[in-house]
Amino acid sequence: MVRNTATSVVTIDRFIIEQEREHPGATGALSGILTDLALAAKMIANKVRSAGLADVLGSAGLENVQGEVQQKLDIIANETIIKAMDHGGRLCCMASEEAETLIPIPEKFSTGRYVLLFDPLDGSSNIDVNVPVGTIFSVLPQKTDGTHGTIADALQPGSAQVAAGYVIYGSSTMLVYTTGNGVHGFTLDPLLGEFLLSHPNIRMPETGAYLSVNNAYEQYWQEPVSALMRRYRGLDGQRKAMNVRYVGSMVADFHRNLLGGGVFAYPANAKSPGGKLRLLYECNPLAFICEQAGGAATDGTQRMLDVQPTELHQRTPVYVGSKGDIAIAREMLGAK
Image (cartoon, rainbow, N blue to C red; front, side):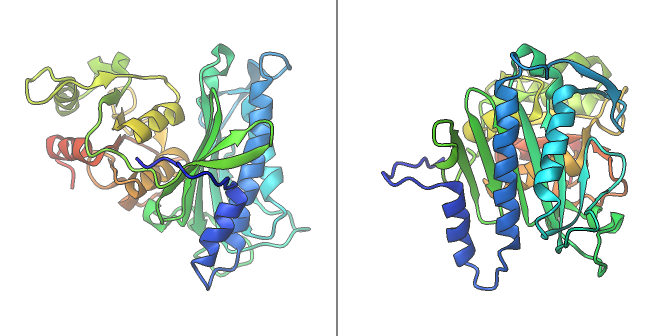
């Protein structure tokens, strides 16, 4: 991975503008989406920082469309992103992990030609115990001709993404994104209130040291998955053992592995035969980032970004990480 060793200070706004200049036909709409998302991230980061002081900890007493108990910060983050994005004239619709159906752009605002999919606060069940959480986003081009987007615009394979990224709210707040031209990371300077370029052109090692998987489900895995995890842990004598590190917040686990190399895996199991994590809001955007950083991702049968979604809240198994380590998963699981 290449780190920024230059003395110049580059804000995310400046970086986005400079990247746009490399594409003479760009309209500026995608740049505007990324800038608005950075603003929403700052607002959410402020709420996360004060979580132990303000009345934003704990359950809201509601369930989302996934049947999961919503945390107060889930609702706050979801509303923050919607309000930051619905009036810019760049989106035709949005979809959130927290909402059952598409989120339309209000009639009083103009629309654009992009779709935004997002998980407003990944890992939110950990917020009460001060574990890092994050926001994940995916941007797709509108494929239909109408003014407002439809479900068909959201149900596109991950290979159609034009941008994807995440924000991790940890010891520092960091925004990582790609537009298909490498992966770049920005750290929020709390005094300046600006995201500054700190990790340009992130590259994953070919193989990694870390395995992130919830071993509590080992008893429910099918034998090929169990054999793969034994291989990763060096128990079959075929490779050096990987260190098992599992936070339980996908963004936190993925971020560590992106920088240091490794695999994040959430296999299907007897309790969740179709997988647990969401294809559109979690797996596709992180798979896009991973591939742009030199890694790979599979659902255990095919390349993650080639999966054709059929449902807005579709779940999937996922194996994402260093290319050499994912090659082992593809071989042992019989994936394409």
